[in-house]
Length: 252
Image 1 (cartoon, rainbow, N blue to C red):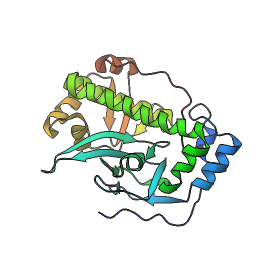
Image 2: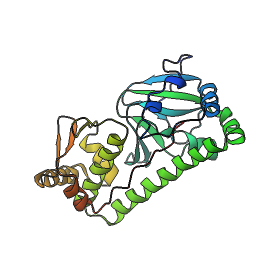
Image 3: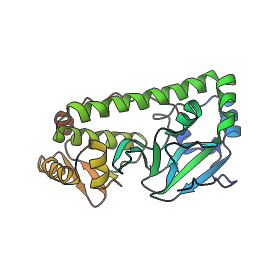
Image 4: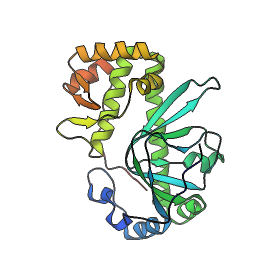
């Protein structure tokens, strides 16, 4: 699938970015940083669901910051089997890997319609050269990605099927909640059972049975593309996972 070409337009000026109003979630820019990020951003891209934004083995002239919507990162085996590595939420940064390694080692596909802020890759070095705090922010985002992958590897390697399913639902709910996507203890949940199976290294049948066992625990309710944590503490105990404390986080 060809990569989308960003249109020469922006609807949300960086000065009016909705993330800047979420002081408890995202750190704010200094005036100098805001001026640079505003010049760094070249456009906004509207992407339909089930679109590959980045493809494994290719490069891209652009980097992306998620303004709205969900996506997932994945790798494919030659026989078509898929492993979902992680999920992208508003505030996450996409495409940095290609800037460092010259090509993407995984693909990124949209789960929902998305709006992406577009940045030309060749200007990334201006960020590193002239704005060390923003450079640290990118390092922080990369380190957070590594920490999430560590936890997912622990799930696939050592958690039981029930534990890893509980962990995934809790992890996704907390990430969505932190960026303001939860309403009344419920989030919209665009994943299918196939996405869950491909994330957790299960067959579709196994994932279905495990989700039914988890629903029977009364800790979580998953219905009609929505996810509700009925008993967060019980779900955390099942997952054997301590939700980390929340601190203001960076974004680009």
